[in-house]
Length: 413
Ligand code: BGC
Image (tube, rainbow, N blue to C red; front, side, top):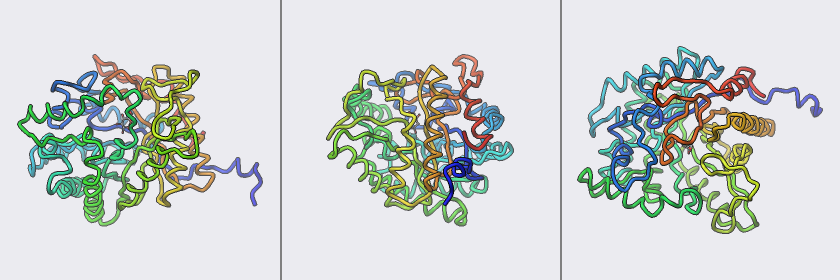
């Protein structure tokens, strides 16, 4: 038996542990005019505080971003591929777009960053949404074909692949909080996008909620098989899930039960790992969030400031599956970078405790490298380790970037 002193000096983070930052194409590239979200941004009623526009212009500045991430001390980089660029019309594949993303991945490799690649981070091609999204006949096959083509073209450069980012998010969103204002108009926004494009069956998966979940689970299974085959079984393939670290107020929390069932449903599909993403958690009663305690610190998203969330999320997932866990997102929206540093410190310590308890955690990937376009909330929330000037796109690392980069370099706190 090892003494506590020995246990303390043993390194919890194993060699090969991935330290990185995470981004999504639609939120940073800019100009994703072929994607469904672009259509949603330009109809009325609208739900976006600001259009994505040029975003962080990472489409043109990716080499600078990747070099910066590497210089900060990371060894991994999570990014997503914008499907609408690869397949701008159904069945029409852009060789130039495939080459572009191959160039992005090559740049990661050149800088020693292992690419964690997501095939779908919410947005889909507008033509795909117009035809009903994943619920259209053949939706799963169309998505799996796209994943296969990407894998054939650049799979040799990918380290870890995720089919979907948080397809479960609609289940964990509770509409009694800061999102309540969007709920009544979501159906109208989908309808307006359909009217604008002459597509009565329009369904943007991001807004379609649980109605697309069964179809997305099928699409995940088809894509999993396609990527495994196209990579000759080399690539670890999984899904990333939004995992709230709730605090049930009593023994019979319907929400806690619903979340556990939700996890089990998604974990029933194929996967070599689970991507765990957590930001916060709420005190929950039997069927809804309880109001934040008056003394509770809130982030720019209106979430409780919960550096312990990722530990709770990892432990919850580990209690339901033996699959390895990659932390693929965790972070905080704040203008006060000292709070980000405090958040990171708490979060990384929590991951370390999970490892010390024998849970197979393989990465800590922070959301996000850059301040970026935060969906409905536009550009207000600041999740970035690096600030981006909205006029010049100049990148300025914040102290938290050096802090987390230092942890990455040292291999732990
Ligand atoms: C999503 C990101 C988002 C982040 C912060 C995650 O749920 O995957 O796209 O920006 O949360 O809200």
